[in-house]
Length: 438
Ligand SMILES: *Cc1c(COP(=O)(O)O)cnc(C)c1O
Image (cartoon, rainbow, N blue to C red; front, side, top):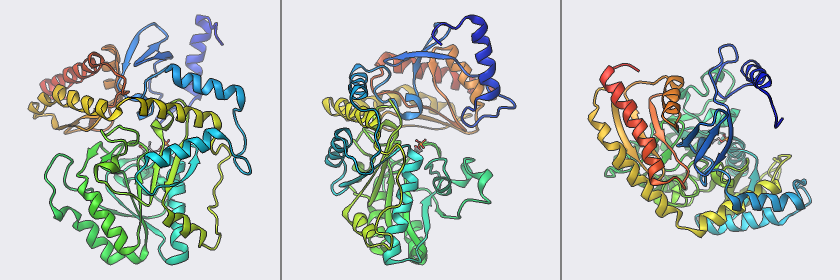
């Protein structure tokens, strides 16, 4: 496939358009795709030679950018030794070392790790664990509680705790289990805390704790449900309430883990320890798919006390050695520099570079940044396809969704590259503000 002539290229493009599914798009009216051929550092290279500055970290996974030599070496090394083996009955160092390192980094007490294959699967496992923990103690507790504005993945149970208003799950409502939703934490990250913000949760739990197995949420930074940052004190209060009623607290750090929010884990902003934490996306530095579910001794013991005694889950590619080797390489990179200082620096650049857009009152609702994530929230949704072309024409790769234009760069992005992303966003928002149309 290395030497495709232009005819083949045309044929492949057509085949892709007509036969290959891309996320959230229709094969009957395909959305144009850009043909990427390689990537290095913070640059994505297209087949026509154009280079795009990556402001998305490839859906938030490639935190070290592309083609990092250390990650390539870790994987290549492992590839020559053992690329895959079943995890039932075998152990291998890439997995053991990874779990040992994770438990030493995670909030104190999250000492037991299950390795799975993707973020959504990690969420499924976390929910299964919570049900199983409760099955020994409170078997009637079978529903989940979550906050609005959340996103937890595209599989069935993960969808059931994703905001039903976000569109991810509306088509499947007739099938997916009904869960409980309370309003999203009302006080934003940078505003002053007020105890009234915990009342919806307190009231709900007072009435419904006997039906509720677990409370699941993204700590501090909600992602695909709207890029909203809320006050860490909410997590402190939620932790107290979950303890009071023996509700399992699940923090989904799939998007926020590994320095993204300016702390190694978003839970660190609040100093809390959830009962279960899910990790994914940046876990391997975006080199391949892997996720992890870490739990405390309480959950470990609860599952052992359940009728089945063991967690009934065993993915075929559980603890894939190549993925574990990539994750170990990514941890080397994260721990060798001060990643949080870097993301806090990016937070400041993002805010300074975007805040002038609050003046565009006709179209802009809010401008905010936290860690390596900068958001311009508009009053109305934009056309993703048109916006994407606008950005590609300016040499940057950004993909707005709904009414959210955001920059979520690899941590290695240079200040100049970040400025190029922000310049394109400013230009777009000024045009929208001037023309009043999207
Ligand atoms: C992306 C994401 C998931 C789903 O992960 P996949 O690897 O896409 O299955 C779950 N939870 C959160 C918070 C996410 O951002």
